[in-house]
Image (cartoon, rainbow, N blue to C red; front, side):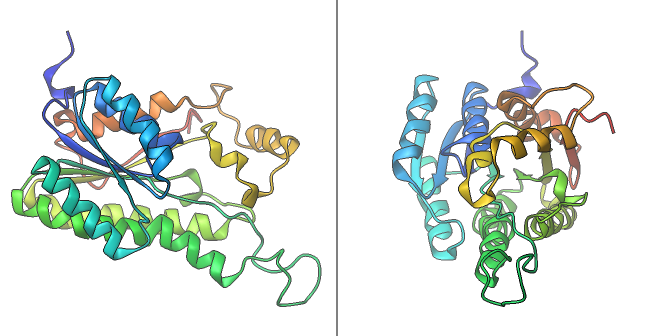
Length: 267
């Protein structure tokens, strides 16, 4: 028998970046735990695939194609969720991207050399990983604060606390998201809204196939070795989902502003 404190029966969760990878795993695991799910990402066809799997688990699922870097789209996402379900209990800020480039060109001195991180790429990473969480927390948070109840989970990364070679924009966005999480956890504590960060370690997701990372298979393997864990393996997406369920459940009522690491690193 599962402890009742871990159940999400009757809860409604919004998961951004839910079309694949960590976001999809969290959406499915929360549905398995009893929650109805609102899935958000830019690609409707991929969201429909996630929604189909959620419904196969016996839960309701609302598909809301959303560019979380656009404030008006995020506001509409929250409005649609409230119109469909009447409440929002859980918000998972998962949407994120990584563009791996050095800050200055390593091939020459030309300011136009595309081997260096451009201003547009810098803004894209910060907007997706950090500003989007601000938009989502404002849109959903006003409802949670009014109800004096809610759980917010931000998805962090090791780079937010450690060096990231040729990965400054991503590292900065995740470090700022960590401080955002801690500050908001304190701000919303009087309203019974818990805000915590789940920081997965090395996960074998589609992000490593992103051509913007410019990683060869050999470089991928090298990254695994450099980020080697004492457990000697990649993390499993379901392990992230299960921990997210815990943070969204009543079992985590006494936690806020915390960073929970799931890295298998032993440190």
